[in-house]
Image 1 (tube, rainbow, N blue to C red):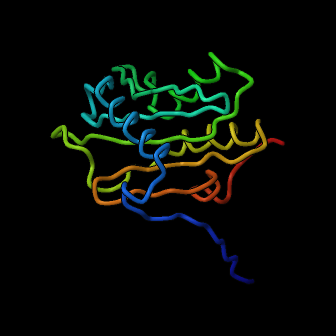
Image 2: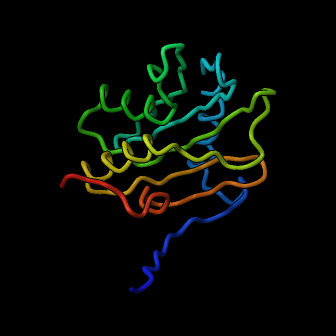
Length: 157
């Protein structure tokens, strides 16, 4: 038996250290939290996606009493992008959230497993990693490729 050592890269930074594009994408994700319907969890998540053609799509979580009929912000944005621009790869995905008190989260919010799997499929489909920004008031996590958040991933091709 031997240990398998996995190397992932996630950068921790402050907003002022980000590029103008990355800051703008986070701002759009923060704005998207206002459109969230989170009646049950009171956890309002927003996402913004930048496509290769420069189109920007926003998404937010939409809950439903018939759980799991709702959808997360990340999938909302990625699926809307795919519906509107099916041939355009996702270049950037930014995620932000507000807690039950309505305040932006102190720590970066991370996508759920289902959203991570959708992101893997999106990266695989287009053959390129997504630049991911996870916003928190204290810090931002930045990584290139979902496999840094989910290194042992499932794909059928």
